[in-house]
Each structure stands twice: as C-alpha cells, then as structure tokens.
Length: 424
Image 1 (tube, rainbow, N blue to C red):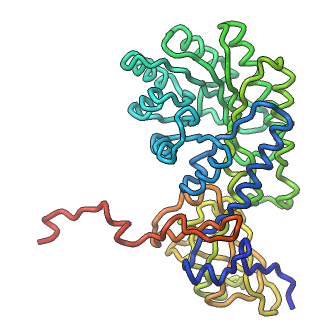
Image 2 (cartoon, one colour; image 1 turned 90 degrees about the horizontal axis):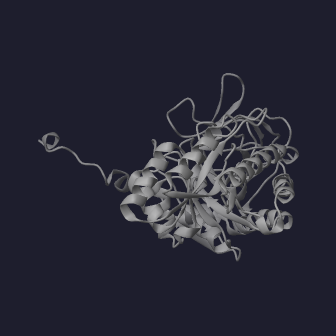
Image 3 (cartoon, rainbow, N blue to C red; image 1 turned 90 degrees about the vertical axis):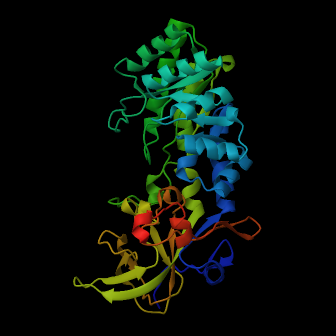
C-alpha cells in the first residue's frame, strides 16, 4: 500500500456529501479556522502592544460571509475602491470603522467617504486636491492619513503607492497638507509588500514610520492618532521555486508582532502610544479555504508524466500561477505514487494547477482537495470558459451553508444587449 496522505472530509463533513449536494468544483471555508487565525494574530499583537485594531482586507476575499465573519470577531474594514467601500457599508460597517486606501479613489466615492467620516489614507497629491475641494463644497472637516513608501534594503520598494519617505516627498506632502489648512493629518500608513517571510523587514518599517512621526510632531506640532502598518504577512502556502517546507519559512504572528511593537513601545511614552492598525488578509484567510475538484480525464504525456484533467482551472485558482498548492487525494487504491501534472479544464496551455506533484493512482470521478486557497481566488476568479461554482462555509458546529450560489449562463449574460440589426 502507498503511504500517501488521504483526506475524506473537511471539518468533519465528508467530501462525498459535499459534492453530492453542491457539485464540483466547490470552494469550502472553515469558520473555525477563521476564528482561530484571528484570535492567534490578535493575541500575539495584544500581548506586545495595548492599542491594536485589525481591519479586514476586502480585496483578499470580499464574499459577504467571509467579511461578516471577521467583523463579528472585531475586525474593521480596509477597502481599496469605491466598490469595496459600498460593500462594507452594506454589511453595516460604520464609516468610522472603514479604512479607505488604494491608488485610485474616484471623486464621488472619495466625497462619500469624507462626508461619512471614514478613515482615508491619501495616496497622491491629486487626492489631496480633491479632498480640499470636497471640504470647500460640503464644509465637512477632513481628518486624513498619508500613505508612504520606503527603501528597506533587500526588500522591493512598492514606490508606486503613496509618497516616498526617503527622498523627502512624504515630508513635502505633509507640509502641503498643513499649509492648505483644509485637512488635518491624523495618521501615517505604509504597506511594504506581500507574502513577506522576513519579520525583520517590519522592524525597519516601524523604525522609519516612528522617525517620520517624530519629525512631524516636532516640525508641525501634529498629533498623530494612528500608525497603519498595512499587511503582507505570509500564509502557509508554498511559493513556486522554494525548497524549504512552508513551516520552516513562515514567521509566526509572535515574530511579526515583536518586530513591529517593540519599536513602537521604545519610541513613545504610554500616554502617547498611537493606535496600531493591522490590515492582514492573506495570513488570516488562506488556510480557511479549500477547493474540492474532480478528475475528468487522465492521460500519459510524452515526457512520461501522468497528466490529470480536473474540473477547476486557473480561472478559479488564480494563485496557482505563483503557488504550488497542496493536492490531497481522497482515495488510495494501493498503487505506488508517481509524478503527475494537474491540468484544469480550460482550452489553454497555461491552465496548469500543479506542474509536478507526486500522487497515488487517480481515476475519472475521483475527488481531490486543493489547499490553501482562501486568499484572492474568490476576488480574482473569472468566468472564462467555465462558470464560477458554489461556495460553502462550514460552521464551528459542523453546519454547512451555501454562501455563494453557482453561476448560470443567464446570470453571465444578464447585462448584455444584442443590437436590433443583428436580429433581422
């Protein structure tokens, strides 16, 4: 018998019963994992720092049930578009608990956020100009934050977002804010990257944000209420091209928290500690999501590898372009393992879920589990060649609920119109 890892259920619910009721492919989320990840992160940061607030990153996964799960646990909302802002408001989030980030905030959406009293971190001078117009039009006072970017040694600088700190651009922007007199700066924000596996990078970020804060306090007598450290914490997915096990690469929440919070505690008196915002998304939701897929065909490739075609492609699993997702079979017939290529159903050469993975013998109609898939797939998926499938959540009590219904062709085409002359 082969010794491969076999999994027949998710959160105590059998794969067979899930696919029988909801079909395949099927995204499955665990409420238990969501809660445990949130509590683990908040425990780590709260042990190190007394004023911590998490804001759920909507772009990571804006399914209503996912967002609601985090809000119920205590998360605020972090949005990067007018669309996401509207989503958060429809879920009942108070504007004062919505952080509006992003490089493009359309005027009407920005105006709504300012009038509502949301937390707005400006990305560029054009946004400041728009805010000053909004203040003049509405008489609404605007308290804003400023997004900055910075050089962090070996780590790539995301200099397309915000104002550069090292070259003095951010300082000049603050001088402009103060001179304009129509908006009050109350926060500093930075988001230094994604899937960051070196916690020491955050220590450097915190040091630079603190130094910037102190210069603003000294030169402009500004009272900064919050420091927004952004997100970027890594999940336990495996990046392509890495050889160490994921468990050996990914820092714990404790490591991230110590790197960030120790710098803040050293810099401020207890009375002056700013509120620390965290916008982690990927590390909070990735492991909560699994995708059940079904083998549709097998074939022997010219290079000798076994090819397997499943019913879920890169249109559903966008993250398969940069992750080697774990593939777990649900049956083992006792044959030895061999190398497989896992293809999706799309008529495209690039539709490859795993380029090479060792698995036991698979046959048509066998189910497999692909994980972790909770981050970004349900916001970046698309109806290319195939429609988007059902999504379910399993509660901590083992209840299964449909949280997004599978699409139909009618749904896909409901916004289309055929010109009259084509109907002749």
